[in-house]
Length: 291
Length: 261
Image (cartoon, rainbow over all chains, first blue to last red; front, side, top):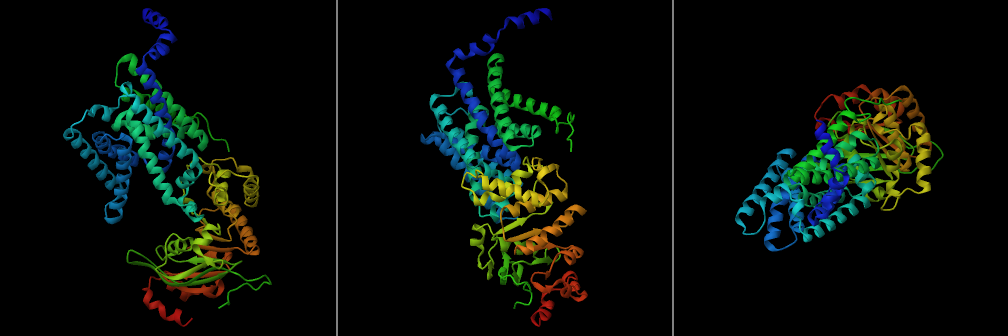
């Protein structure tokens, strides 16, 4: 026991945090993870408040064939993913409207269909796509081109969410009022979905398609337990999401474990802390609301 | 035609005018031949069973559904223009909005000002003043920083009323405003309603609470897929009319008495 502590003591801050930065791939991985974490964290506030967790899951799976097609055609993968992400949502809306099937069934149906199409395409289209990278992410192996793409996507998502933040908040809170004062809620709906598709593409860089939905809901859920103010909620979500991504990458580097898994696990642990210890809404209720 | 207009000396304007509107959803008739004319400065109850078309009527007035026939004018202009002018405010039922949402009372009332703001919705001094003034009128200034979810049902209702005031809407559509309301809020609402009347606003109250209609509303409209009867509350609230509204008679049997009205 003593020995272990001494060993820990000798591992300095420098060797833990700075030494990995001497590797080019680690600098890139940390940058992209922190960025994507922040972007997804910001969006996750709207996802949790709007109740779009399932929609986030659907869109993130549905972008799969888009990524494959884009690679095969030599286009930026984000374009393919965007087309399929938005397309899947349009299809969900269409099937729901034209049939008697309930929405959650339609969502499940469409996204698994798209995902299956993606799997089939990967195995049929001759390309150098690594299926495992798409499914589970590979921030440690991200290329410079992908890094640039992710930065651009992140910029678009953040700019949109910041510019329309009040309208989107109103749309999530009370769409009837929004419509009654002449705000075009249809546009906001598709705007949010487009941003969701883009964020899903960014997210799959770091944690992969299967876990990207965690990036899109967990930080928002954690922050929601901690505050009653939307501005603080977004701030907390962005910070917790970025920090978990950075720590996830470090943990992955030190202990040689799956990066995507470690990022999402850190997020989940943060959520559990909030679930237990959040001042007002944690199950331990450390602080009563004084009226 | 003007039998229900205000008797006061102020100029009588038409707040809501619906002329023989029909609304159907994919072939299912929700409302037919519904006509209604409310001059400004009146408070009118919209009474009917669930599914009688109350919410469809509201949606048509807010421009969410287009009548397949008939016309609607709000303050003498089309619904679309009224919407752009922020003329119509909808005050939701408490259950209608997610009240665990992380917004404060102030934020909610400020949402009434969004239509008048620029695209970024950055409040100006005048917007802040309007919000504060609205909160004063519903007696919620002290609670303005509280999250909306921590308010009682009655306080929440007042917050949404304040939002409609902040919007400076001249036509207010209230959805079941009397449910879950405490005595204090009810008293405050009675005062507010008479102020609204003096200010020349038009209030349409959707409800199935007959006792409150009697106390609050000058006029009442009974509907079941169409307007069965409307007029002064004291005259319309007859046993016969109420049986018609709630008795579940098929609408076609009810056409006779309306035509002769």
